[in-house]
Amino acid sequence: MSTETDTEAKEQEEEEETFEYGGGELVFNSIIRTDVKRDDPEGLRDQILDQLPDFEQGDPGQQGSGSIELNLEEFAEEENVQFDLREVADDILGIEYRYEEYPNEPIEAVEYRDGEPRYVDAFPRKTRSVFLYWDYPKTIFVQGAQTRVDDVAPTVNSSLKNKVSFTYHDFDEEFLLWLVLKDKHSEDLSTGLEIVELNSTEITGGDPADFGRDAEVDDSDDISQSLPILAGILKDMDVAMLEGDFAIGKHRVNAKIFGDGRVRLYANRDLGPSTKLERALISIKFLTEIMEEYRSWEDLPTEEKYPHPRYFEDLHNEANDMGANFDFDFTPLVHRYADLRGEDPNSYNLDFEIYEPDE
Image 1 (cartoon, helix red, strand yellow):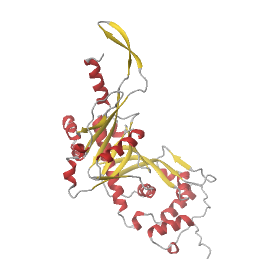
Image 2 (cartoon, one colour):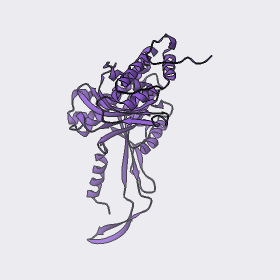
Image 3 (spheres, one colour):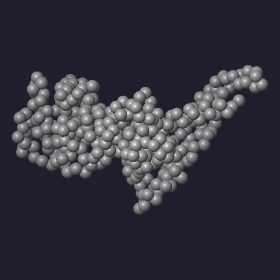
């Protein structure tokens, strides 16, 4: 038999999941680029929640699911968060998509009536949520377990019908390499984002006979000083993940960026002592900046978007200084980047040898 105390406990359970860091990290398993199909995108913003089904409690035979407005602006005002975070809250359209889970088989529970115990079959109700933070009208950052995200994001897309198109975002491996080289040469980024240090990376796609298909370096002060990473870059392997410390204004965060579009932010650095709401807003601020940086990179002219092969010459020389002797063929690497830049590889004067293909 349900009591008022039971109801309060359920409400508390549902409330506590909001802005929660699972296992000390906030996981965004999907970034969605959005294209609003209207001449007046702002006119649609006020109608978004009306397009989505509201959450209503169901029962074991018909589990409830639906959307709940996540009023970040109101939460930020109540907590009196810092001004820059309040601006984030004002700009973001927050949506919680909540759904219920019940066990397939009932469990035995004890119910008391008039002080007497009675055994009954029960289906304990659990609620789960996926949080969508929409930097309207450009990008949705989706927080939640991968299996939930895979279900919820298409549901939201379908509810918006032909008003908004969704494109699931990946971070191009060339962009991740570009960040590595920017950090290595202490070059500023174009947005408010700053790389403090990159201390972990993963590269993939190598020849197992040489390095194995994957190579990962953790907890390094400078990933560019790691011989396996230098070898992987010079073998033209893909940068599949970067982890490091980043600064956004006065906030410093530790984040891991995956090529497939996932981002994890850890509850350390400035996020450690922050409230759950502040952690969420700082994380969203980081995500909006990294996406602005990505868009800026996409628009760069090819000679700035893709590294000049002299960067690889520098890496090769550094590896030699550390005692490495890379004697593999650099021709494919140099030719590929010359092609990306629209340049003639014969115009390069490089220390390591490249070969011209046989006629």
